Image 1 (cartoon, rainbow, N blue to C red):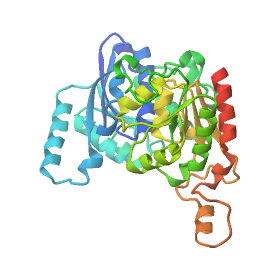
Image 2 (image 1 turned 45 degrees about the vertical axis):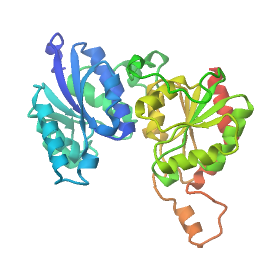
Image 3 (image 1 turned 180 degrees about the vertical axis):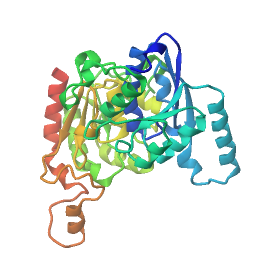
Length: 377
């Protein structure tokens, strides 16, 4: 409780959480906790430029300071990189911070944190994702592993800022109470209106497919997406397919080919995607950053899990459902499936035709059935 004497003073904290999209979103409930416990607290947030829109949607974040480490490291000695780095350093120097909170626990985030010339707080050696990052911190906090990512960040904030976690954050299995639906704290009024598309004037329910993800093993089979689209449109729903890369665009076009009421959206910025999600009746998502954005916007979402562990990284929120495979070796946390690889090399006969055999047990008919129960509750 070491900081309670500052409760009536404006506290200025520099928060470092640069990436990924899911990790940035997982930090929002902790910012909300802090704002509730310390109403005069204000955060500046260092974040990768690709995700800089999201922190600005939270009322407790006063300034977003983008970085471009992913881009800068490709051309570290370029004039543009040097110029942008100097601008970043100057942005840090314009404000005096009570302390810096590195909520990422990586060497790169610790390196950024120390540039602010303020005490740096973060996870201890055993708790940080990269243990050596803790050597940069003046105050270190133990946060147990084996918990959901949202819970871990909330515990770090509570320890660093000296308040008790709300009751909803301390229950078993990381349950989310109905009363805590607004825990992410995003202000929808800050998000631009949805882009008009073919079915914009149609009052039929909308189902968004968040089909893009990084690991090959996290992809639900395209044939399953098409079958789910048939089930949804047959029931009078409109299906909408966002995308973020050319590979995802081509997949979306294949899923939609020949199917009425299935629309491939234009490429959207994060604000545009957020607006689409707000307008959705429901979403189906693989384990991907936009699925966490749907959760942060309190959109009913069914997330599909094969090789990854929903207990640790699943979409968090009271209108979120997680459908995880019961395949014997799941969750394996592997980007390449040994079963699929051995079959592809001709080592043995296999019925598997995609990179994640465990998804065979996550069938479209069952997904549609669960969506029906979600809409009724």
